[in-house]
Amino acid sequence: MWPIEKWTITALSSAGIVLFAALVLGLVGPNEATLRYLLRATACTSLLQFLAAFGATSAHAVLRNPVSAWTVRNRRYLGVAFAISHFIHLGFIVWLARVYPDPFFSNTGLSFWLVGGSAYLFIALMTITSFAAPRRWMGEKKWSLLHTTGGYLILFVFFQAYVPKAFMGDVFRMPLAAAILLVVGLRFYRIYRRRQVGA
View (cartoon, rainbow, N blue to C red):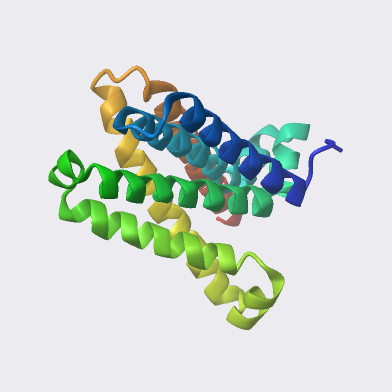
């Protein structure tokens, strides 16, 4: 068993992100470039944690190794860590919008607010229902529907943010886009295998 398990993962991840952001802001100052850098950084931490949680079962079905087993055991805690990271990301979005409204608002369309707002609503609901009492109150069928729908919506948001620009030559987004495509591939491969077994 790995030494870092359960809520320790969530605590260390969240503390690390907060400390990193505080260090950057303390050394450089809260200017527009710094806030945009922290937006990109927290988007990366959110994406990696989300992929680890969302792709855990699919990866373990293929790999069957200690790392994939660890992600399955701790997917709940990785998911909560993702939520915290992405709400920190939201904090930087609000900060940037308040302090530097132009060009922020001129560069964001209605779809940004609708899709992004829906994703954050799902993240909040999924985080709340990660705990035992709300999950029992909701019931397994509704819980599964919420987390499946929310998971695919969040995946879509990350997919459209990284994959098209990676194919257009954005070097920064290429490794992250590759990680997204890998998780998508593993997810659909697992679905295919389950259908083959059930056929």
